[in-house]
Image (cartoon, rainbow, N blue to C red; front, top):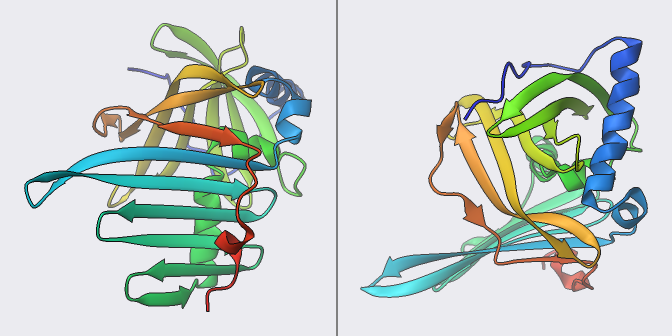
Length: 239
């Protein structure tokens, strides 16, 4: 699987033409999700994955929930047969909750946690009106049988490169430099199995590679939910 020469950009720069095409690609990607109005109307997003594992000779289920309440609440929960672990950010505050207690997040951890959520293309495009959001068209590439246009987006010191199908506007790939998995390297996510979710078109399967090596089998979402009324207690300061 090749996606051409993906530029390792510290921050996207480009000509006036590149900036202009960058804005056009942002709009094209929004259309691929169902339209800017539908994207802007999203108040919350919940992604659920399920993994089956063995414990004591029995099959057990681990559920991972990724939740966002826009614009500034992010939560990750892992729940398994013998316990759970959670991390969440609410504005300027963040907490880690484990079986051994609760800890406030250090500022650098809080920022990295938010950054990890914005490595979801939908969440990133929802932030397109934030100060510092910059989008530049940086060329074309090949992703399997698809021709894609490359869009580099910088926000809050992080740069990602999206591979966009110019015919449909769907974001088919998402590249960034990050932990891969134990050292900093090239991370590529590719998206497939697009489905309608309340008028939005969202991918249900994500494949990840580290330094061009596949990281296991593609991981499907068990469910993708938008605009659910999430319990406010999920983001309340732990006692």
